[in-house]
Image (cartoon, rainbow, N blue to C red; front, side):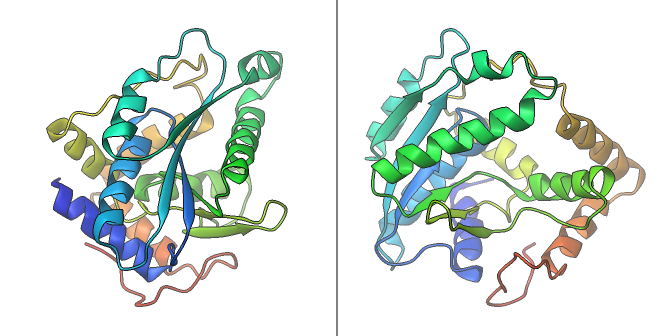
Length: 243
C-alpha cells in the first residue's frame, strides 16, 4: 500500500464520522507497534493539507517491562514535527499477580495515556484500531459476552471529557503490513509476556482460518459491522463502505 492510499482511507474515515474538527488537539497513542506508527504517519501527513487545522501529540505509556528504548520513535516524531512524551509506569508489577492481567493492564494503560493527554491540553485521543481489530472485537463480544458489538469510530468519555477517535478503521491489517514493508518504521518488540496468549490472539487465528475456509468472510463481517446500527456508533455521512 502506498502513502496516497493510506491517506485516502484515513481521510474517508475522518470525514465520514467527523473525527476531526477545527482546533482539535489530538493525542496519538503510540505503543511502538506497526499500527500505532502508521496512525502517527497518517495523521501527521493529513495535517499538512486537511482544511480543518489540528495539533498532534505523541504519547507512549511505558509499562515497566525492563529496557524499553523509545529513542527511534522520538526521532521519528521529531522528523514529523510532533511533540513526543513517554509516560513511565509500573503497570507490569501491578498486573503480574492478576489472574486476568490483560483487562486490568488495558484499563491502567488507557488511564495513564488519558491523564497525560489532559495535561497537554488535548481534547481527543487517537487509537490505531483497524478493520481487522473491529472484526475481532465483534467475534469476542459474540463469543464471550453474547452481544453484537464492536469498536466505535468515535466515543466521548464524559468522565474525562476526552473523545476517542479511530481513524484507521477502513484499513485492513494486510494494508498496514504492506505499507510497513515498503516504508520501514522503528517498530518496537512488545515486551509483554502475555503477548500471543490472549483471547484476541485466539480469535485472530480463528478468523484467519475462517477466511481461508470461507473466502471473503472477513469483508462480509466488516460490512455487517458498518451496517450494524450499534447504539454507540455515530451515523456515517455517506453510509458507504470502502473497497
